[in-house]
Image (cartoon, rainbow, N blue to C red; front, side):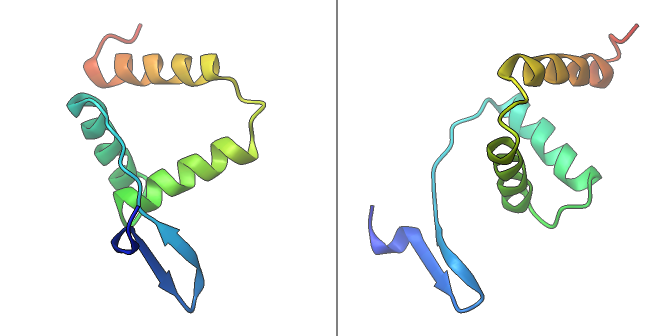
Length: 80
């Protein structure tokens, strides 16, 4: 990692840039979600989601899968 990958500010901790590979469809869902929920940016939303996952590890991966599947059904009109 080079220094170009980090930014610092007097207002908070040093921020580090990461790369994340996602399917196009999932990224489109993320973009729709952060906008609907009133976040200022995709990055802000993803930081919030990651922080929530770390602070609440009792919520299982299977739980997230069920939520994602339900969201997909709702968005695609497949819901009961």
